[in-house]
Length: 115
Length: 115
Image (cartoon, rainbow over all chains, first blue to last red; front, side, top):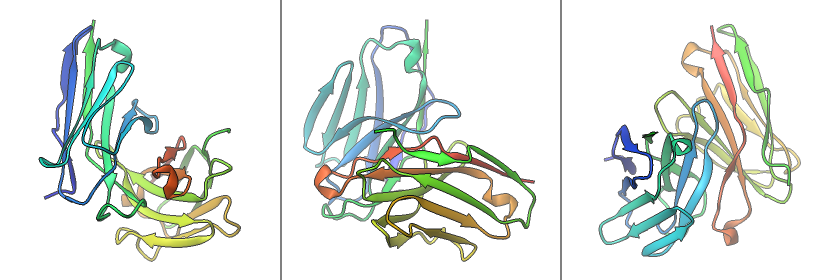
């Protein structure tokens, strides 16, 4: 089992809809997760971080963490064509909840928002 | 805060040649990371530094790869005797210490093509 796994997508949603991106992880001790957005040919850009169970909202983005189910998600409300990108989920590797070193990334989900 | 800077942005080399990449982290960040990303995959961890100390190296990092951060500021990644399989985007990221929850910010990357 991969340490961080994303549903492979690609995901296509109409403009204005909610896009839902999902990620599961294997290390029960992991306590911090990050969502990065990556446009084609560009480097990853941090959009959300989450450390506690529950929801964290920032503008149109909501990150959700469920440690019991080892599940992280990202919701994008009122999706715009400019949101079209690859979304990467990342968490600490073999952290046991105490290490703040390297990140393990999922393979990414390609999101397309069509007008 | 000028962000993480990487140089060069693109490098084309012939198989068997040596290449060196440079990364300048965000000025107050003491942690520096190198990742490699191939098409359709998330970034894979290579190595990281805290100040000038190299704290961890991935098993992916063969003996042909070496990284340095001599004064705890910029870092270099050298690949000796390049192979076609080394073709990838090499990403550098930096973060403050663990008290800042290890939020990593990425540079624009160096795209390596080995012919």
